Image 1: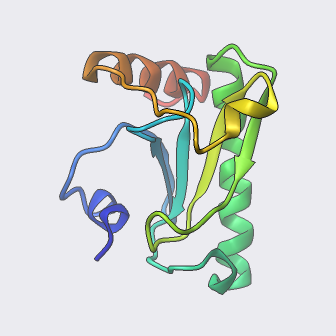
Image 2: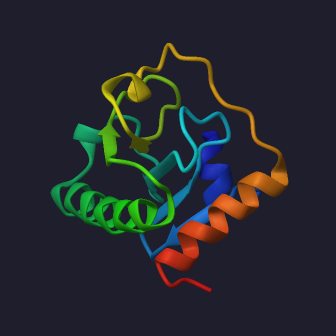
Length: 132
């Protein structure tokens, strides 16, 4: 069971910004920028291109909805999208608020936020998505 499956099962906490029956979006706790969100299918599949077509399409539509909320909540030029797939063996999409190409460089030092700062960011995104 991956760390993401443990988040889905609520065995470990996460700063969840959105959830549907099949998908979950939560803050990356080692973000590149404020508002960096991971979007996952609840079903554990290692490689994104091994997802069935319905799950793959649904994941991308869900990511688009979440990205819209992030863009409203966090001041940025765009929401960058990347799939790397090496860090955790559970398909996931990174949604990263960016102002320039360098903001998406995974070699950059990761930011550290307090739990209170992470909660505030989560709440801003949830409010933008109109989620209580």
